[in-house]
Length: 328
Image (cartoon, rainbow, N blue to C red; front, side, top):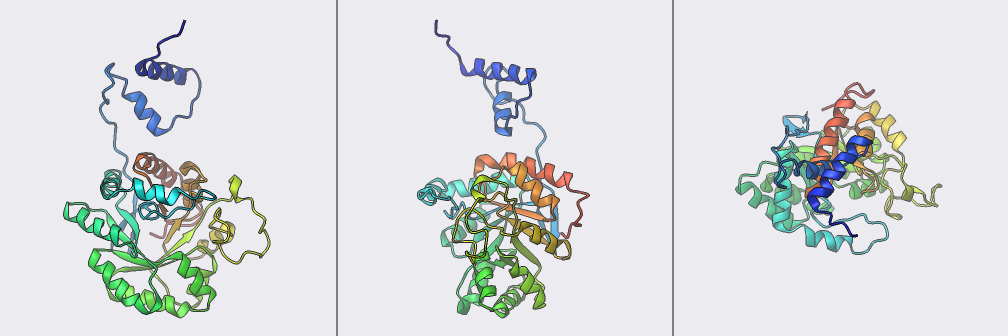
């Protein structure tokens, strides 16, 4: 005889099973189970709200977890999948982007990154601020050399608290021997009253910038463990000169990156810490904070914010006695 299993019955059975043996339920699953507690399926009273800890760069307080900007602009590292960017653009409507930022605020994530080239997101951010939103804007700059000043002026007008050279250009300009351009951009950003940073996938970016004595306010540098299946590749030698030939890894030398920042007294925003979705946040956040990152920049869907905030809090707390002191 077929048994009629209701949603309420399933949740009660699942909760009972969790008491019998260890089950690794996600935070979303735990919330769903809690909603069956009053017998009517309505949400139970919310528990204590998670608040992500903050650091400080200059005069600006920044949450240790920062909302990344690739997803909201439709940029996707998706290995061999060719439809993901279009999917992101359909998912992240204007309303969804603002709702995601508001949700971040509720969990203490007070800063987001967005591309200065994305005029749509800039317009959404203006509307969001007009409606009382408070999340801070770190602008990712990828303009042409001759338009550096204009680009900075635009992000100042949009309300940014800081700006940094995008990693692709950081890599390219360093490889081309144009570190002087990076220094010029840092100066322009500072002259406009913003925090000034430099990003790079390649370790030589912060190395060369430091050697040139540029001294930005912060670095944005990739960091992730290579312990995930798609990190296996054929270019173990120097055949591939950059990080873009194979879309499955973004920090080619995590150990070297960790050693470099161990000796550098400058704030470090780590990005690609989840290897573009290949690593669970529990793993990626722990690896980044344990190994010296002061902040993690992570693209998040709205349904991931609560769990990411909770896991970031856990990782920061567990990393209080790490070898590299907190630089922000």
